[in-house]
Image (tube, rainbow, N blue to C red; front, side):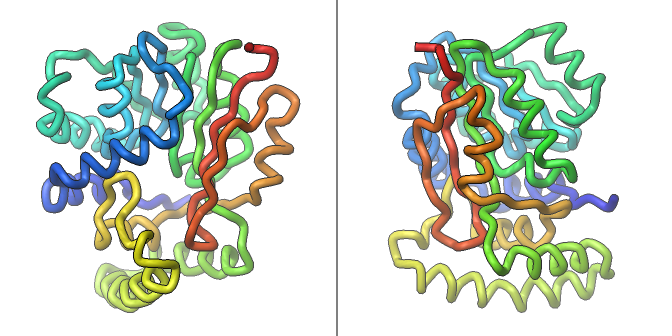
Length: 262
């Protein structure tokens, strides 16, 4: 299955658009998502850490960090973005390169770290090609007193349309990719304005242009309703925080706590 090169897009974002403002916005959003979780000295696994902002911000919060990403480019992007986090420049962040669906990756995680107090995977598991399996594996890595933090694309009537658009984007030549991108950007801008000026900012420190590329290129692409996610995890987890998407087919954010852990 052809897969979008997220690592290349993150590299371009970091070198051309990353700023202190992006970092501060990412810090605000991460704090909102984890506001009721004491992260100090907690083991923290970031599955699909991408540009590394969440992993770096978690490290600022004194977690014991581990990053995992299928794309080897993301390690260099993480190291580049560490330049914006001078306060943790000497903190070791172990990185595992591999898919969360692969037995070797899971074995490496479990052999070295067993389970985690917090497993974080924002906007990643729906790009694996086997979303439900990825959610199951990720949840299995949460310790008995732990939390699962995930963001999954919301199921909407437009979701199947977007799946076709994304698939086409990944198979057409570079020239047609540009045409699709510059056709989509005005639509994204209009949607953002309609949703409210307060939502015009880019969540998690993203940049408007590279976010548009990320959205168009994000394939494989799966989605689920809020209730489908809750039902899938209900035997072992309870939902303690939910932040709905503002863009219909954007990411719903979930914070789950493993049951019987109080």
